[in-house]
Length: 190
Image (cartoon, rainbow, N blue to C red; front, top):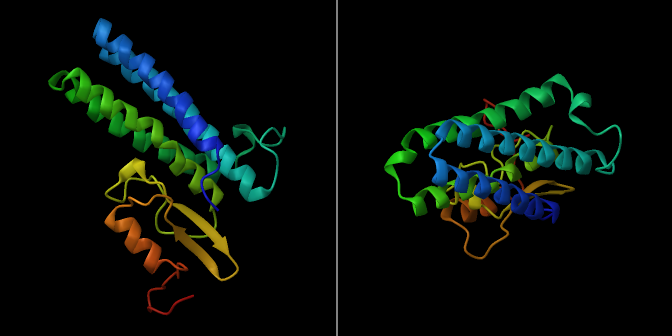
């Protein structure tokens, strides 16, 4: 399974909103408004990506009346909240140093936030699989630029590279997690 086409489209919409907020910041210097606007955009994007992953995992249409944030379990809501909060925390640290960066540096760094929601998609899509990392979660050198995907096959979950220019960690994961084997404390593979 590769990343579904909806994720890049969601990223493009998120990017447009983040760029508009960043442009307003460059014009008026209101860092608090910029942070709030980007945080709201991130929350919406992560929610949409999470619901898309959940829909695929459950085999329901994305426009199903049953698929909305009100119907998420407590665990799912907590998981989504934790993902969004970690992004908002990164954003807050970014805003704190933005006045020391050039306009081009601010734009480049702000643009990266539009790529982060793919992590929410994979988290929801693979719930219950107890996987060690998600594409785009920042645990690799390529950070949110990760083009990898998890693929479920009869014998387990495989880390699949989606780009020819993958970072070292992604190449290593593709080799080692083929399939991923959960190891318990006694080191026996499950």
